[in-house]
Image (cartoon, rainbow, N blue to C red; front, side, top):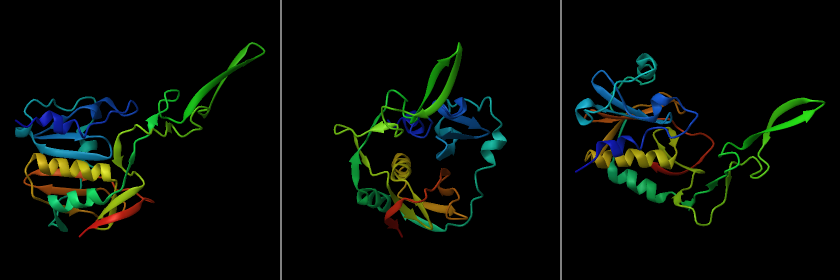
Amino acid sequence: MKDINSLLNLFVSDMDAWQDWSKSPFKIDNKVYATDQHTMVIIPDEHAPNAEPLKDYDPKNILSIIPESRPALQTITTKQILTALKAVPTVREDKECKACKGEGEVEFEFCHEGRAYTTESDCPLCDGEGTFPDEDGKVIPDPTKSITIGKSNFAPKYIKKLYQLCQFFDLTEIDLVSQPTEMAASLFERNGISFLVMPVKDVEPVYTIK
């Protein structure tokens, strides 16, 4: 049996810097949302009846960023999405620097004449990179590459989420219904299932879904 919570948890934020409301799925009216601030999935609440209403955040702020659906600009198949993902080179995932927790910066404190001073600077262990190469790291799509749909480029890890969404709901096709500009969020929809995703810039495109 398919677990809707496992799907929704693919889209929530796991970063401490993000607001608490983005760390779990939530309900607004008759729809359930999950977002990591880069992607958002929206489904009818009948698919996730246990989702809790949104708390500690104004629902209008969520609803205002979702573009209006229009006639399909482009229809892509799940097979096309998979082909695009397979075209992206893979690399080993870097490991996070434990000293700065991936932030690349650390806070220093020094004392002079009885007074303490603090300042932030590049982490001396990772030289401000936030990560180290890891020969034993998980194989992932190369984050320096992108997949083109319409006029926008997208990070492969987010297009993978689109593929997983289509697989979960047995969608063989999904429509691109909003893409106002190259750098605006794009909205994909089919059968009441919606996927909102932000594009990337200055990332080499390696495959175009036509």
